[in-house]
Image 1: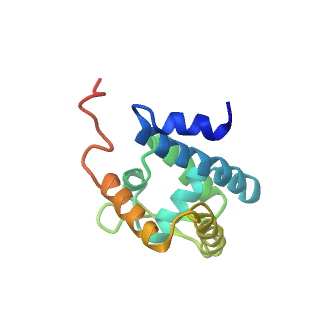
Image 2 (image 1 turned 120 degrees about the horizontal axis):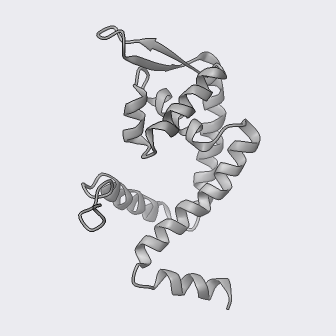
Length: 159
């Protein structure tokens, strides 16, 4: 059976929307993760954490977990790697010395410029089948799902 037929069958199945989203995410991750790991020597979790700290200077590691739904130990390992490589620093909070706030170093900022540029170009690449109007709609709908109450919890799959 041809790849197009297989994908059509998968996407038209009873869990088609889930399979479409899974295919997009895993397809992009396969390309992006491999590139970032080879070119920059870091897992995508570390690049994502660096991006989050760059966007929100002073963020705490546990807050990164809210942005990037990954296990806390994965975030902690990413932060540790970035700190070891001199891309992040941890500073005590002014309100609670036990609490650590994260900041991107100058070296981290330089790396982020390159990572954001290549990621933006990759984003353009995989969004190419969509017109500008379709992109706007796609992102608006995806954000609606991402910001919805049931993405990170489930009554159906509760243990």
